[in-house]
Image (cartoon, rainbow, N blue to C red; front, side, top):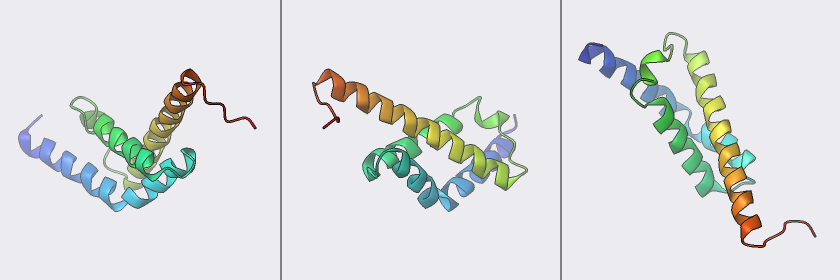
Length: 99
């Protein structure tokens, strides 16, 4: 892929990501019970996943709505994984969220 095309793709993905950052964090925070730090981590993980070489080139950038949807789905998946990791860690440590 020519360097120019790669740069344009990266900039397009970055622009949509930054335009929707607050919304992405809100979705992740909702999944993670309001934990803003974990939500930001999930959003960053989603960015790294989608911006990885080989992945970025396969993303259709022609439709901003679809791209925004892809970001939201990826963030939600990362947030669910983070919640599951936290749940398992708390179980291992002997914490129980049941009253």
